[in-house]
Image 1 (cartoon, one colour):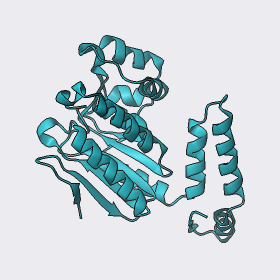
Image 2 (tube, rainbow, N blue to C red; image 1 turned 45 degrees about the vertical axis):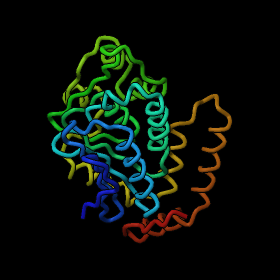
Image 3 (cartoon, helix red, strand yellow; image 1 turned 30 degrees about the vertical axis):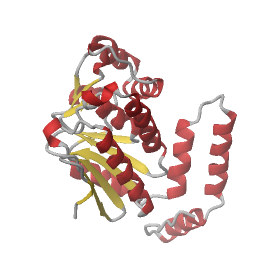
Image 4 (cartoon, rainbow, N blue to C red; image 1 turned 135 degrees about the vertical axis):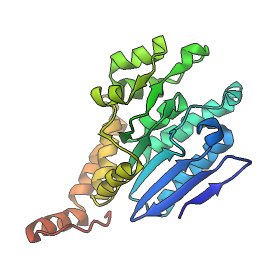
Length: 253
């Protein structure tokens, strides 16, 4: 069942759950799922609700053939939007479960920021990607520049940001931005596979992916996560399941 998390006018965000996989759907179709501040708050609320309900993986997608066309331009005049956006993106990137972006159609600006905040991307054939800030005289924050560069490669990142290039699904696959090609059901399948795996391994590994080599605090967090995983009941369960030739039942401790 799809449940609207909140609704103001025509700005719904839906949250659905099945077998430990939560699917968050942006459904602002009259704007190709572009987000204003209220919709951004609903998105953040949906993500937090999914975690509170013990989701093991989260899929982020858009309704009616588009992922997210960006930010509603009227909101860009308000600095509170960009500040809040940075907080929501940072939270999405740091959640302790695997996140999958199911992308098709327009994935521009803020939409691309959502996609790079996720761990894995499943891309449909009609997907189009852009960072059109130079067309508007804007800039994105360094977090976005860093992640777009990491996930697309520096050449493609410079191409999108500095020339306004629009890349497609073939580019996303060729350059490694997309981990799989497919639709929402395929993305949910990826998430379901992740949901069956060891939670401490996933959350700890995500800490490691984000830890800078020269940041001692972040490295210490990773070492603590490493030690916790090696001392966990889940490790013992994984070993038992391997010896007994069965699927493990991980519990996250």
